[in-house]
Image (cartoon, rainbow, N blue to C red; front, top):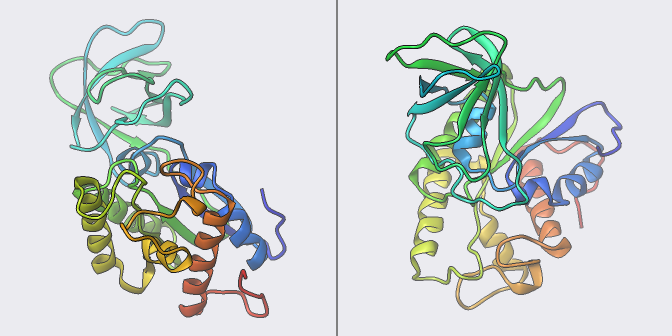
Length: 275
């Protein structure tokens, strides 16, 4: 948690680039804000949208409950679930309501998209063929200064664009005056211009730019302006591995976001922009 000076917080929503990145603190420290993260390494835009209550799910009961845990099979929505698994990730665990019961929805690490789902509660969801609706208990933000949404790097494509739009819409339901920015995804070292990966990244960014206009920040352009490359990938000088950023890369993110906030009139008066 960054030191708060005006009682407001930057709400940083995303995957490992936000969970492990230092850019939220760089940005918030310059603005005099605190930091609240809703960020989970390895998770896709769909998983984040479910966590935030932006997208509901329906499930069918897949077997008998044991020790208060009911196995489930997802019915809707179509989405991207856990395409990026490694031993260091934690199970997805989302509190919410399923079929009128309060409990905890989990999707275990290693489970395929349609496998490994369970709901733990004191009661037992009704069995049968009718699907059961699940809605997450969305987090509550007391004093958001700005929402910055940066997800889709784990699943660039049309589904990510849908999920991000749903997240922004859900935030505005609960915070009618929400100030939100959407950050574009960047090309990894193995996604040079002309590759299939680059096409997915470029397509997602183009969709987000059209949908959000001035509330979209093209980080690929920001990285290229900081350290140009000839193949459209993010420069090695800004990365700690093929995808993730080092301190220099996080500084580029913080500067790009701060300047867009300032351009929208959302930067605190009297506070210097990150250099």
